[in-house]
Image (tube, rainbow, N blue to C red; front, side, top):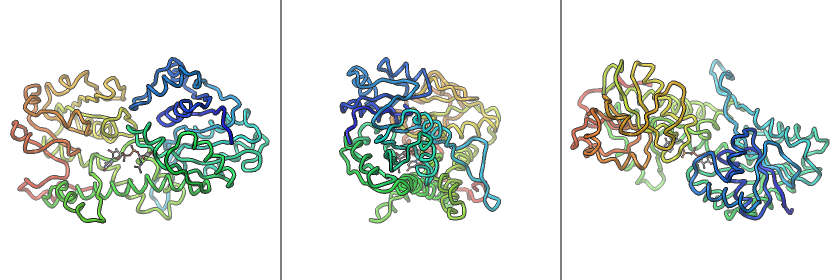
Length: 446
Ligand code: SAJ
């Protein structure tokens, strides 16, 4: 198929890089978003998110005239849906007395509905949003059928998940392997022709539901593996072991690759996607469910460590370093750091937070500091929640001059205990209870 004009619906972390990359490869792209502020920003050649390399790509695309943004779709050769699929805030499913989270598919539904008036014979529609199994055939195809056209007969319909890592999106978008699942083999071929515009990695064709499962399996696999690492950190704490040392030794085994424990799993992908499997088949997913539970309760484990350091948290001044969901990104969605702050405050602590990638973040109930210095100045203790490169580089001797705190709690293995102790700090390290002389058995529980 020949694609001269495409519409990309949803201009967030995935849609915007995708749209601008197509435009940079000579395709005429209309980017669509319901947020008019985003549309204005992009049409001025600016961006509303932080992602290395994205601004330059968007500027180039807008200046070339190949990329425009609008709140409404238009007729095109292909439509790509890249809108969010979070979970519902207040609705839960139930299986055998156990509650599980439910996907909010309203943005996918609206995006598909917005295409209906513009859909023509021979078009291609691709869903990229991470979705529960069978969404393409059971949700998107019936909505598009309202146009009077049938998926697989009159137009092509495919599912192609994005698999890029935030922070490395621009490179991974072109270099990663890409899976295209069609509702027919012709649809998969059409999708493959579209992404061949810029994808240098392998393009694999399959059916739509397999492609949906592939995406969910990748993120679920990672979630379960992080959960076991987090559980190891709790076990190491109980048995007076340094989990980081134990992991590095275990990982010398040729078939073992244990991931890193931390304050929990955040972001809009790994902490969300496994629920799509649980929702779709709660009777088949006890492991996936419990892994989610382990990762979701890890912020409480961090707070127990803060308790160990400070005793009662009532009126304690705590400086928190980092609110992003992972190192060196500005994305605060589903961040375990945010959860830790909420629990600390709930227990009476006065928390001031510093997030260098989003200093002006407006998070309900969180007191954001204007600088690192402002955060740490009068603190009783400092809690490191994100391993941003600039935090790892902190020199504790210089740091000691700027803060009244002499207690630090490292939840991400960002700091070296010996160096911090030498600078006069008492350091508490998640998953490392080696120097403790006490039996912590009764203290640390799930
Ligand atoms: N984390 C740990 N320990 C680890 C690794 C990660 O606690 O050893 C935490 C991070 O701090 C973060 C969370 O897990 O809170 C997720 O971070 P991540 O880097 O593992 O993944 P994401 O969410 O940024 O991106 C994932 C990627 N999927 C996989 O690696 C299988 C990416 O390729 C996907 O495109 C993306 O989800 C997505 O959009 O689905």
